[in-house]
Figure 1: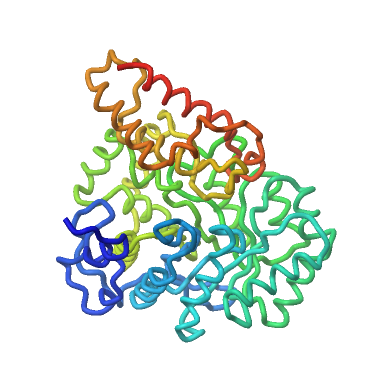
Figure 2: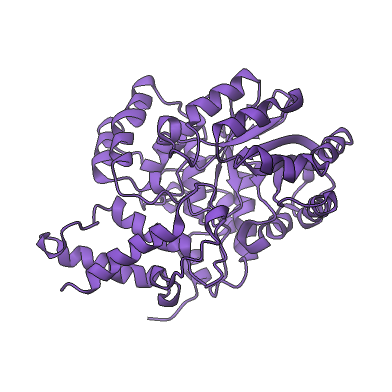
Length: 448
């Protein structure tokens, strides 16, 4: 068989081809799980209006944290990014969310190059003040670099990034140095059209920032999905039910991140999937999760980090148009389905990559993603060779682990330096979880 590159394979399979943007045929369109999803419409996207500015925003927003990479991982594949952006815009997606720290600092420039090929009024771009405590000059320099990288003279949505760890940190990053006041002046000048913040952390910090100086925030970005509605990980986040309700009280639109919890809600355990299929036999787990996140009327847009064309196509199909959840479907997800998920052995990683790069070269997100895949596939072994499917499950973990994560970047090489821990918005004890993955792998290696 002729060897072909990843790009050639994707194009041969119809994934990433710019020509799909016009005259799509249903036979050429598959879901992320390989099933037919029908023609992807260009004119049925659901939109929500930001009552503060009148922006008409697509319910599906493009999260630019997971752009496709070149085969050697040394750069973002700009050609594929351009194709994805072209396709998204042609099918009604008009909101693009990035940050200076995404993908080793490359995301803003790649996003800017792709969007600059289109009329400025055809899209909304969001980016973030991602810096830590320091003089105001540092924050202003980051803001201006964002404008330059995105090739724009104004930002549609600008966020104080990753607020929530402590009130002291909020003040050190944005208040004591005068940076928030600078952003407010930039908004008055029209160079920031909407000013908001993204939240991970403690309830008291959320309440404090939401009420700070009686600022009328234009939006707030929160983590919302059916597992986190009432079961957010204690000490890591706040139940989305509370966050959403408080934003509604203050007339602040919600922008949603992690509708799939880092992909976990796209690959749920079989028991959970069976319950969903009993109600809607042909819907994927991801479609259920996206319908859940998009149903509340106060949601302006739902972000998805779509690396591949089939992910983009399936998500467009879900929101073009949105079929809101029924009360019964919502109760199913918040009740029995969530009970299965919270009782499972998942590591609560959303693969956001904030922990990267590891100073010792480990691939933390891929390690956790592989472990979680084994959990979702029902292949996690508790009793070793006593399990009748032991050999198949053992092979699935060990072979898949080596394929997903190079050996020198696996959990066994973790030095437990702890430098990753304060960077994690989910407050995961990363060294402890790396020990858990490594211990599991070692148990499998020592049994035949």
